[in-house]
Image (cartoon, rainbow over all chains, first blue to last red; front, top):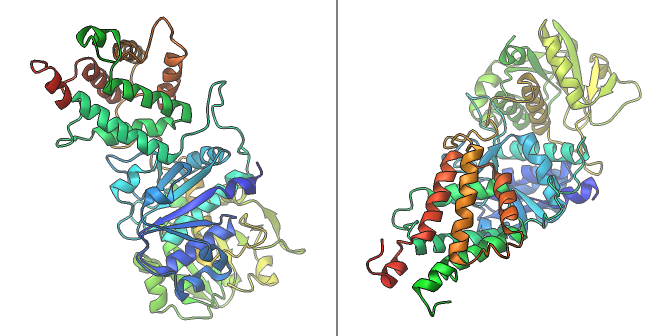
Length: 259
Length: 259
């Protein structure tokens, strides 16, 4: 794939943005670096003339922006989502450095869309939004004043993506192409796996939805680090089915007619 | 010198800026990356409330900004000045890449002040201004739309300076140092988990040791990619225990006395 074809697969997802000027600035920042796919999740403002003014010549990016009711909807069809986070959370996905994140993200873009996810200007990303992402990155900044403007954060990330796309390590086959690696799982498939996992663990009694402790975020963090593939999702869901309806020898003994 | 002491030696020089919002955005971008010395050469606007609003919490940088009649005056005492230029000129200083420029610039900062010089929003730097600089850099951008906003250009350069000052591995999110990451599991613990996994999957009937397919190598590959931590091993083994001896509500119905 050409560098531009990889960049064309990158969605920039802005969650609950408050200020139209920031949406315009993000569009401009994207276009300067060759990104074009802007997704707005529950925007708290209109994409109005203030947005258009700040977008300068990037009004085509604004015009093609899509609006979504949920982050999960905006990520449909993506194989990897990286959350921008100003601070580390207890329960978020694995945090990596910016440069460490962009190269594998572009490698993933060889198979399907990927996303960078930005939160609200004041409150950042909500925990449930963070849980939809497989990685988190924090732009290195002054510990006494880490308040990057939203457009500035989009600019830095888009710049790093462009540098990586055109840089030393050209995106090619996925990082660990072993003989039996399969394409990466889509985020929607992964979400269905997590829902199934929760049901199965409730079934065995390991998980108590009334007292969740932090079990599910911890498991999301683990599997998010691995980067699940389609075949692996099939295996894991087969395992979950077999937990819910065991067919093994011991169960056969206990429940002679059971399948 | 500490990274911060180097960054304290960097002047950001804005020549003939037209829009107060851009001066404010530049101040904010600087402060987020630990830069503090803003110099305005023949500004075409006032540093007014629009500037202050865009500076957000970086109004201290605005308040300490110095104003100069000429670029030469703003560069007095500097040992190196790098011009930001949207295009290459016939007669400009040597053009280098952004990352190529920032490392020697910071090395120079060990002896005295250095400067990054930005031109007017529309016309860029004049030829005589370029001649005051020893190097020129162009931020890589989309050839069809290279129009970075001034604040965004300052943000990218300040970010690169911070990254270089902290040696490319800035203090920030160390690779997996999230607050709840636990130490990596030992190989022996991991092997005991795999043995337990095989038993549990045999128990449910998903795995048939007589016809193993390639199930276990595939699961090893998945968990190997994640890099399991000690706490995660405990969770996973707890799950395996609960598969072998379910205590959940459905099992309680089926096996009233079961624990």
